Image 1 (cartoon, rainbow, N blue to C red):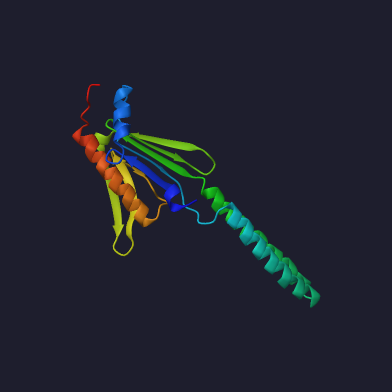
Image 2: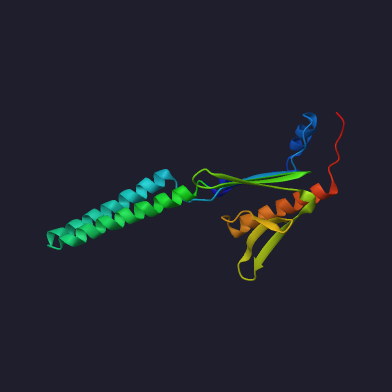
Length: 187
């Protein structure tokens, strides 16, 4: 999955049709919507290629040790291949996690879906919500959370620093717009 696919957002400034579409249907306009997913640089095809390469090298080296009479080493090479396979599978499984954030003038919905598919939702009032940012002097924005009534909801925990900063910018704009109010036209 490419970086562009793992971080896609629409906001009021970028997509005026979301505002018009919400008014036409009698619903609230969407000020900001984002779907977040962890980035993985290796796809399924690349995984198979890496595993074939690792298995091939292990088989050749293990066979050489087997022919020299060191048969236990052959099994250790097999265990290495199994350990690498399990590590990749665990990584792919954790990549199934998702976060969906939607901001409207009266509601912020944060929906987190864990790798098993279990969803956890938080609903916040944008008028009483603030965006908290934790910066590290050397590494930039490290933690981003929406806090309402003293309860923080951490968002974008699996994102890279640059993506987390883009998310913070979009959420800042959407919260400011929600607090200012949205002018609605009669169609």
